[in-house]
Image (cartoon, rainbow, N blue to C red; front, side, top):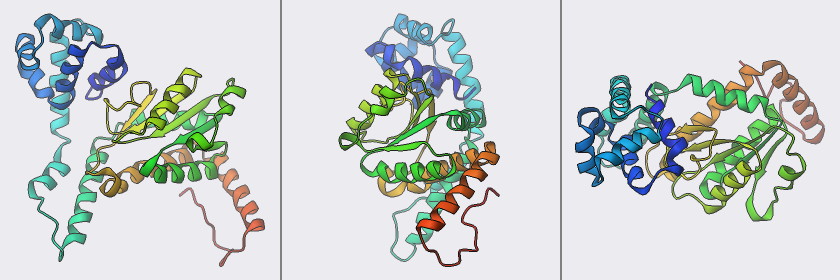
Length: 295
């Protein structure tokens, strides 16, 4: 219930008028205003009209403002029970101190990880993992600092599943989209503000060519979320590039473990083959130890 309004906004956002998009911002960032105020009052807050607010509800597929308002009220009741860790951390947050910064940094990481755990949508997670397992080919894309988690995800998926590519932009090419469009393709895009135009362009082009899109980003207003088949929303401390990596990598690790569990037999065979090949190509210390384990 808590995700339904946001999902409708995400999927319809590109079709909304400029005035309706203003109402979207309140619905996402300050839903309590819609829960307690009339459509006329929301129109005053957003400098629009009551008719625009009603048309906004229709555009999202609701019968009217009352249905939207009731759904938001229910979602807020659920959300209030899930809000604890980050708010508690922010209430006690102080400027980093040289003598105690390690404790403060780790406390922040733990708060955001706990928040992500409490807000985990397991139905969505199951659908995302299933789409990864069923994909014939996977392309992972992430530019600027997102290239680091993108490369890790590509390496991990290629090890446990195979047929995974890392898109590197202009020096790469996407001919495989054109030559194998009959295959089930999945593009996993990692992008956070500021969003590189290369990532956005790649996602839109892949969508036009028929690929499924998994967007890992900050929210419904992200430029890659509008065309995504699935959105994994990740709330991280700011700036993401220097403070949000633990939260982001934790979610990527959840995806990898999910694939390993849902496709255990094939993954085990893949890892055994991977280990045999790597043993022939490289020398290791302690070769009798297993590098991979599902459990």
